[in-house]
Length: 113
Image (cartoon, rainbow, N blue to C red; front, side, top):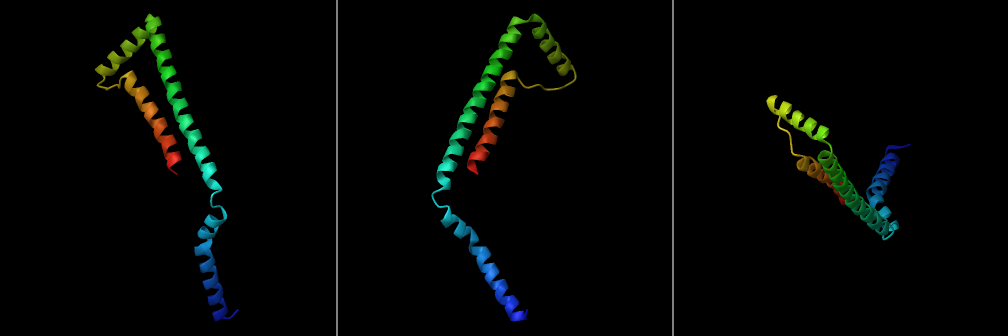
């Protein structure tokens, strides 16, 4: 293959490769939007379901704590030991809020892309 033929092939390849995304976009125009909307709706629903499940988990944990003196005593003892050791523990509400926020952020990042 001569040098000019190789150059011509290289120019053609680079032209095809640079226009490929545009050609794919034209070929699939309007076909991916319904799929994208369905995925976004599914992720929003998943976010709501995760938040509801965490709220139910929190309610269950609260009910378990109030119904069991052993658990209340254990949690209190753990907090006292952690304080003596100089550890700062977040409140239960802060932990559940953090879990909800983390789940929301993960799902939101999937919707944004």
